[in-house]
Length: 223
Length: 223
DNA sequence: AGTAACACGTGAGAC
DNA sequence: TGTCTCACGTGTTAC
Picture (cartoon, rainbow over the protein chains, first blue to last red):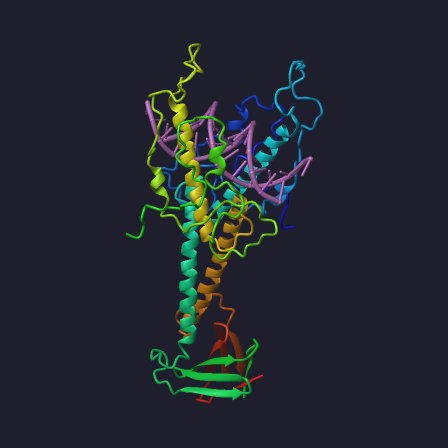
């Protein structure tokens, strides 16, 4: 349900249209055809502030996360060449063969390589959607920004969970004088392997901590 | 001071050795020479659990973060070809010229392209060092894992700073609007003219406030 | 003039 | 056997 196989990353990257039957006519149309216009052909990707001072070169990158993009893992949806009707009927090629291999796995190879390139470009697009701040639009800068963003996020997570742990445990730390002031106002209620600690905070508020062997829900009841 | 420009990502990626003067002898030595051995040529990158069930293909990826890797931004450190001593002394090429362009910007182009590839591979290596869990070793999987890891980190940051905000606002400041936030996490237990409010702070701590007309003792019991 | 970035096809290697 | 991934060189386009 969540991963439709249509519109994976439409108009996001070149993704090479089916590309009919001319085999090496030296790609002139198929180049600008996909999205090679190279001039700001994307709508809006995320919160990139459109830093257009130097970012003249950019790849389209328009859509959202493609659904895992693993649908291109299947061998070949439309592989036209398979030892059937040679693409060039003219020139029966009566002389020697064109090379060591007649034309077997060569024409399939370019298609596989094309699919591999498309998959990699989709992954680039996905990563670009995941990184909020991309300095420039080329792939190398995207990789660098992704690595920097990951480092920044990890630092943020470390800082946050550290200060969260400190803030959570600061009420029970005896030497932390900022909270309760005195250290003797904690009341312990040990019950078997569980303990219930209650500390008054202010006049009408109390902090309660229950510690148990296994994780158990904390339910309180007036008595 | 913190970023030396030597040893950027040594033995991390192919990075194509200087590559003397043969221009298109069809790369046979230069291929396995860098690191193309394709069989686990890296030491230890991070905490990858060596999932060797299918990951037979991997790129070296050995070192740590390269210091921004922008040292390869300079035009060309050792560009051997510049209209001086044609690379192939034999075959004086007395006939027609080899093409529309004699040999001007062609030999420089391959070097620029090589540097571009190396820079991109260094960025891949840096990103690979930043992502702790990489399922497989190919580039597409690395990009997917990086995007997934970024999403996971962002979710963790959101959760952490949310509960940090809750823990910080758990002093029951009535006028601070930031306390409510979601507003739904406070549980009220009205009992006549008294109310008991319980808010979870962290995982094993709760803040409790009881409001009553007259001062009454607060006794809690596990249920 | 000239650099930078991209997609393409192709040979090669590892499963 | 075929499939997959990669690096390479080349043509092209936009600054």
